[in-house]
Length: 312
Picture (cartoon, rainbow, N blue to C red):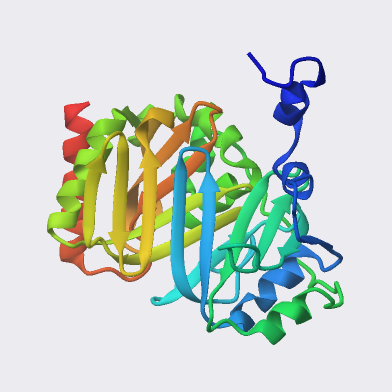
């Protein structure tokens, strides 16, 4: 029973967006800024060292270091080792909040989508450039012209020819909701639904080889992308934790509804990905191989993916 009785605000709080809840928090120190999210994104590298966090339902990723310049749909896929890589969808991002330091929390910069849901959060560190942080609050909101959208269709014929960039941008457009609705029709292309626990076991096996893996956490209007050797993977309770360099990805399997093995064209031809979906039927994470990769790495990756498929 709610302790507020007649003054109960639980239902109202349950309907509040992440943005509204933050602004209404008692003692909140900060506020909305006028700078457009895409402009803020382009300025992130100026912060130097920072902590980057994206939460997507049951999946969370945090990484530390300097940001690369974020890409947007239509750009090449860039994932520079040692840098935090974001891919942003400006059409779905709505607002940015900056907060001042309070108690044990450092200043933060928080992006939200047009519905007020959290997209990405940046925590400053003692070595972050505070002048750049202050400049973000007053930067003029001029944005570059974006490339015209690529014509897409959620059909077997379309996905038979699609590449990995198309796959990720399709997910970025609406958190993978439309993508998920078409997966069941793609069995002839090698798509297969698999047990999430088999996915976790496969990642643990890959960590024994310290295989390079590209991991993508799909927030609202934001992909946080990391490529590096999978140094460790372990289950703690119901949560799979992956470690790669300074990046940590946590997946609460209790919140995972489905995992799919999918196939799209990459540098080495058809490449298998693991797509993770939550109970909202949104894609919250993708694991795959991208860019120039040694043939031995591809062989191990595809062998493990085939083993997961065969065991499902």
